[in-house]
Length: 347
Ligand code: NAI
Image 1 (cartoon, rainbow, N blue to C red):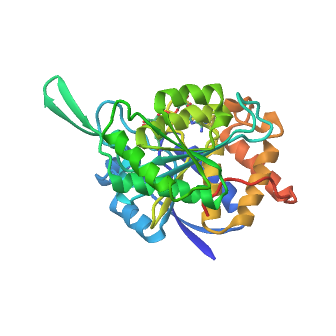
Image 2: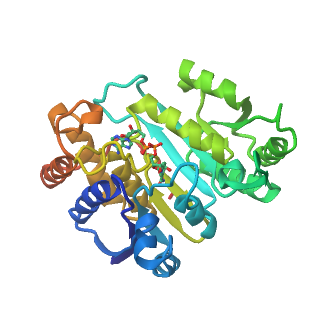
Image 3: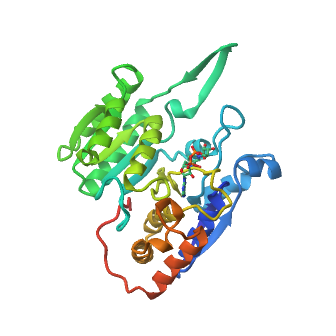
């Protein structure tokens, strides 16, 4: 069977990490047909559209996307392509597992934390306007529909994967109506899952608690902006943004992308670590039912991580992005596959 995938390499380090990931995926022997599209500033230059119609149609057709990061201009310019894609395709659940890779010295060993971020509303939507010169308004929209939907996604995942505890993260002491609604919806859903312990923490305290002791949490469910910030914080526990995968799920389609951005500071220098996008692609392989291929890549990846000199610089190695990909492919071709411990998956 051939899997048709919409591929958005993105910009900055996007094309480098995407190219490395695609090479590794193709080396599994699984058949892919890639429908490749630009998005963002590059696309606008060529097609006068930030999300070209053909890209839109492709996602509607394939229902599965693999996406590199796309730069969003700061303090002006066009609105985020990432936000628009998530809204347009109702990719309401952002799934971000935070787990260590073996052999990487990190701030915390054996972290196993799942972040479920609401993806379609909240302050992160960037609905802003200037009321009068010198005064701007930014709207934080929270709805019962989206809050209930994300809570249900989190609890369903917990039940299916035998997770024990979910904390809803909020600032309802100050935003009593908006975060208050988010909490009320989370509580109502929690009641339907009595086997899962439900807790609530205020977001600022959560940051401190996470740094003091990340092991006290099992799963976090958060509105959009808190999820964005806390995901990067948690990435630091396990070695940084070069390592942490992500996936955006809706009822009809899914787009797999790393947590990190386009990293303009290292773009085009063959320095980027493709591990985060590769781990996102592993989530994609499982979503496609290609569990054996996912296992082969994961085993090879973990073997590469045993030897420092084959790693990229962000994790203490010397290899470039493409050398790293070569090393994973080499391991995949030589390694007999042994079942490693369970990996996060939503399939
Ligand atoms: P960033 O994630 O691009 O970079 C933060 C730091 O992490 C930088 O020092 C960078 O070098 C490092 N880093 C990130 N990914 C890495 C990798 N794979 N390997 C090694 N080091 C890595 O965050 P920043 O600088 O805040 O954002 C840059 C641009 O990316 C912005 O325009 C932002 O809007 C966009 N962005 C896009 C995302 C997406 O497309 N999903 C997500 C986050 C940011």
